[in-house]
Length: 232
Image (cartoon, rainbow, N blue to C red):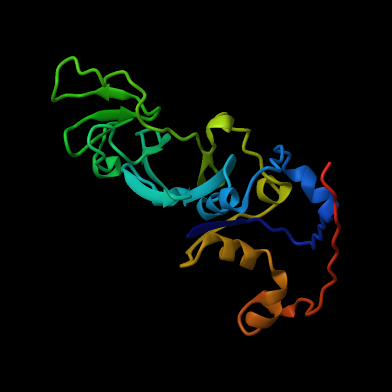
């Protein structure tokens, strides 16, 4: 599981707290109370959908097509000469070959197997091996909405009911001009849920990183607050 950390800081201490009762306002998708554990587990295994995710630091993508796997989805990314980033499913609609192993033709990739050209919208532009091929002009491949901001490439992962992406917005600490800017990357060999649990747990820093991290100087005790909300 790969993770990007974007961090901005300025020389004053900022303390922010969110109560559990307020957290429900951050994500207002209707709740389906009929979901069973068997329905929920696959969603966690592949990652929560209908959200923007950082998938690469900007420096990691050049003109050469690049294949990555994010949220269990194989994705091909590439840049045009003007720097525009495209992202589509890393699978040729003809025989299933990896498009990321093909050639960058600007606004499209050419499959290395038979030369089929698929553009950044997932449409087959050309099938050079066959004249008047019925595949030409067809949207056969999934395309992802892309944003490149703050030195990172973000993709929107939506399901069929939420194909239109919301605007990608950032908190003041990531977008404010008065903050400094640093982007770090790391690859952790674990399920993403363990990684999320780890970075949301500031208390471990004062113990586990006591010899190597500035978090070692933080408080070694904390108060927890819980709230119970009944459905409806």
